[in-house]
Amino acid sequence: MKNIDVIEFGRYEIDTWYFSPYPEEYSNCSKLFICEFCLKYMKSPATYARHKVRFSVAGRAWHAFLLPALTQSNGRPLPSLSINR
Image 1 (tube, one colour):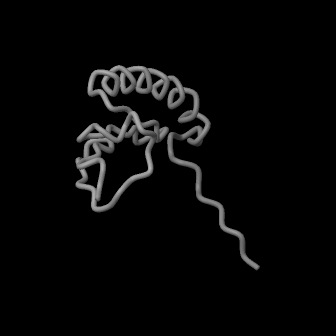
Image 2: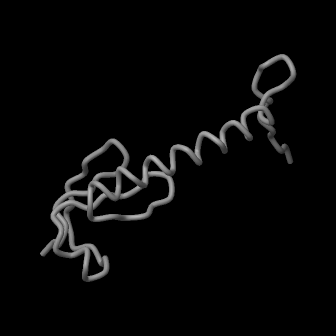
């Protein structure tokens, strides 16, 4: 017996197959929303939308910090490192 029918994970809707051991307050919702970045789960679409906005603002700030560090002075990505034994 499954307790949650569908999960929304990022832009995907996924039908569930089995019982999911989420807390009791989430067992009565037919659709569960899961953030694709932090894996936080929410039962309300409004809460999920608000979370996505907050996460996208933080994500833009993180990418603005990280992307210059991952490129060379000529704008090309840094080469990947490989370890040979």
